[in-house]
Length: 179
Image (spheres, rainbow, N blue to C red):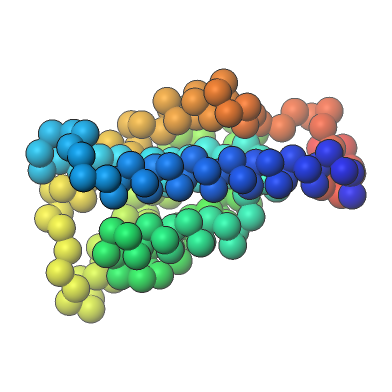
């Protein structure tokens, strides 16, 4: 394995952990950053999906599961439910990274929006089946819409600030083969 690929995996793994830990820290601080009563977008989900569609080899599933599970604990969600749904969505998108690499951005955005919508619907359905109290349906839809709308700026931030870009045909995969 190429040394630079291994080093990049560690660097991007630490960067992902640092960015998501910073987002979690801001969320638990006792400050008001938005209008009262309106949920903000799920920035961690956007960053996770943006990164997995650009550099899937730099975003290990256990790291994502650990970060999302920490969010479950901090935000008092049912432990592991949202984590499992995010991991399923992550692996679905990881399997379609080669297709999305060739597609224009609106197609990628639609794919991500579809996965986010399916995850939210499954989450609400599972909570309803087990009779778990949940936020209002309207608030959940507002958060989903905000998350889908914030995805393009997150992609731009990831690309131009953090340097997470799509692989090009001249690059090598993790086995050293041309893409």
